[in-house]
Length: 122
Image (cartoon, rainbow, N blue to C red):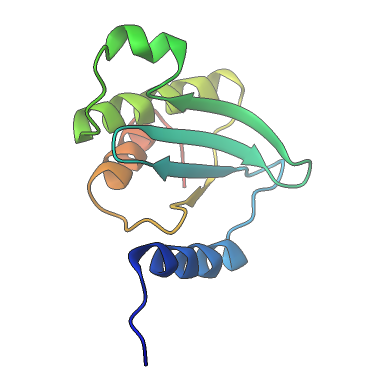
């Protein structure tokens, strides 16, 4: 029995979560991706395959507020509150949370709690 790489373990978790989590037009999917330095959040309607709202540490608006992204919890909190605000502007109140195979702690948890703090329900 060979050991599984970190990337393969994440892919397995991702597939397991995506079997259950599906975004509809009434309740779209909030998908989170994190790299070593950046964090990305998108609200996706899977029935049409369209991205309704997206925010990341590389988007123009946030680059001014976060000049040197370091990949920390503070930046994830800023991205989470911004995705929450933009979703409410578009009339999106309820979403399903897709952690995309990442463990729910650290930056992923900070982003989701900040989005909840802005009024998003998941």
